Length: 423
Image (cartoon, rainbow, N blue to C red):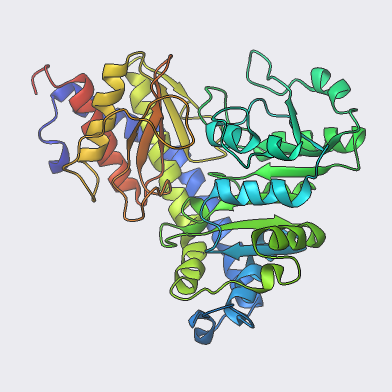
């Protein structure tokens, strides 16, 4: 008997059991992917001769921090790049992305997004919304993008002429969907985009926003020629252990520019104390393949079970996965609030809190967010959020364990769709 399901109506229990059986072959594929990625990470640690003394951390300026240098070498080796910068001083994925933009772009340069309009927080960085001082537009850095086709794919024909604009210095590719309904882009699709840009503009810097994407496949975009790539340590790469930080990987000259931008010209990435953080950053990266696999299993289960209720989900449970994000369109603000509230109530932290729609920094619409996580804002831990705007879609992501994701998703479905049906 499945004791954890004892309070569910029989019809829901039956759906859960059928869903679990249906997705089992897919979960076995994820287990194999985890093994492949874990072996690669292990080899990186072995090659860099990681030792206990590397976890001591540094203070003050952070000079001669051998642990930080080895960690960056591990990132560079895993992502197959010339160099890396991994620092607690980068506060988020958005901060790392912003650092990359300001490191490379100069007045009269143009940033071009091939993958459609970027998500809300990046729109503020560019200066498209929010009117915050210090955005790219304040420095006469312009922006353009190629709208996606109706099917959510890149419009290569439309982008071909735009890319000939000599002002374009950086072409950005956003791997994950953000708050769009379109599908996230697999590494195979990103590879095609990189090749397409290179044929037309071999001179531009190709940048990849890799947030939510690390370890969700057995290859990464930098293996196929991306010049610079960013991600967050309290998403996949931190494995649910790192408490803060972000990374940039890429060409050595671009990482130097990024270090000078984050810090000061001259000192660059050579400074930055790691006191109290470095062990977690190492351990988080080591367990990241496994934790990412657990989170992906949770989204596969959520997709299949929600679809069995007749809801519109993306991606479908049996589609290729390239990130942690699962979208479900609920069609009403009431359902969004109910579902988010249930996820919050079945979280390990702040389970007694009721999430309410509110204005959040970096977003134009009111947001609702459930995130009962050990690290504030962590999205490798189970969370659920979305903007309060049509079509009223929620974005489910993360889950340190498949078991927690499965329990919480089922509880949320029970409270949202079965509460008045024999519960």
